Image (cartoon, rainbow, N blue to C red; front, side, top):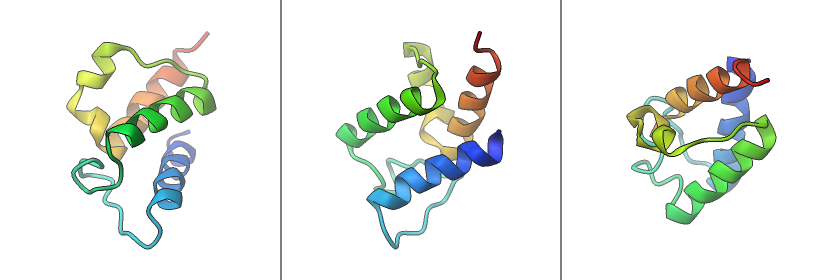
Length: 82
């Protein structure tokens, strides 16, 4: 699912940032791809699309703000889903 997950996330960012180069190994907030409200939207849409729930500990992970790290976290959550 990793490729599908990354594609979905990249498409989400591209819809909001047309024409911007996205580095999947860098902090997406620092790249200017989202503001604080955008992060809330991203979390909501990820939870809805992938049928997962993030908890407070997820948000504290440095990898949460990097697309590749987010992909791995989502894939882990979807594999552990009931």
